[in-house]
Length: 357
Image (cartoon, rainbow, N blue to C red; front, top):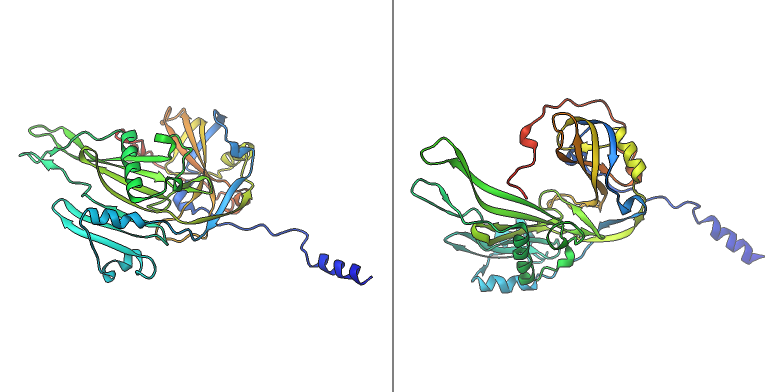
């Protein structure tokens, strides 16, 4: 009889329903503005496996990186250790893991620093915006590498510095399967003797997304990605980024296709610029883990859908854009109801830069 009473007491102490973990929300200001994209019909030309299964969610966790090869590269460039007092506000103290080597060169600064514990990388071996000019001050620049060639250069330097490629998402549609954004930088001036403005491309920056629990990081600033800058003629210049540590805690429900369609109709969607059209066609669906900026230590990594859409009708007819929707089902009501409409002025500068890849 006593054993039955004991078992009954134990059962009473077990909750019938475990409380669901509440995750942080993706900040609205970083998704853009709610309700500034208005459309009639919604058609789908894409699917996502996450419409049919739960998705991984991770919290911040300690995962120190191996920076042992950084010193070897610094010594190969004849860099000297920099006093702790000069770098601790950027990388932390030596006791906290911070380190820095540096020197001065004719083309600009050289520095190799960071912190393996907070996973911050700062490597610069050549000045990025360095190029010659002719007698009329026009830039003399060499051809830039392609996005694929640029990624090859980035991977060569990852190997040289001992940065594990498993840190990065490898199921994207970028070079070698990486998830990569590419920006081309240029100097512009009027051509000599004319009133025609000409652009001179002098460098490119590849933002390579970190993987968090098997999902690509949706990054802001240098958080959740490694930026590789390649200068005039294809010279590697620098790496910069913060790749936060993470720990998966489980798989959670995300919005399925029907729920996303309803969310779009009910203005549960954010965009960087506004438009009006008759119909949007969803051509691609990406699920990512939101990563805070490098100067913010996140509690967790909430999930977000990025919908690539083609606009049909209106002033933006035929243009592709991106819409953002918090993906976790628990967040569907957490942002509150839509509180009205936004007015917007079409801005041609918000269209895709033809010089970007």
